Image (tube, rainbow, N blue to C red; front, side, top):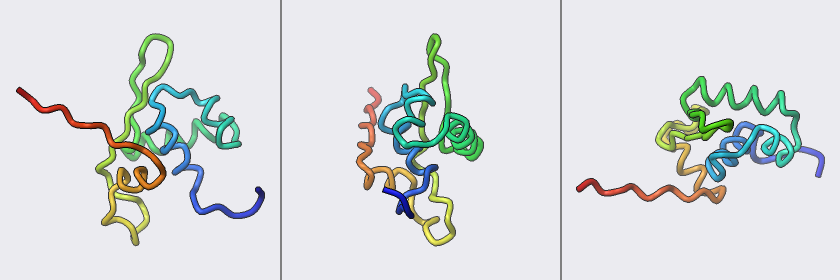
Amino acid sequence: MPGWKFVTNHALVLCLIAQHPRITGREISATIGITEKATRSIISDLEADGYVTKRREGRRIRYGINPDLPLRHEMQQDKAVGDFLEVLGWERPQRRLKK
């Protein structure tokens, strides 16, 4: 559906990474409908600002997210990115209790 959207490509990439930590850039770009180059640029933006971390596992990358960081827009800086992701269907991992 052409036209404007409620959610930016940055938010869509972050949402996919949160839901599928071992997703590839190619899979993200195909799902969202943007180029792989645009996807990698968005991932770099998210990583530079601490929203996403990357860890190599064999030949693939496992992504992590920091759900406690605030949203970037000044009007929503009192909201955590994890709260936003939950609205989009992400389920916050259960924290393990230390013994």
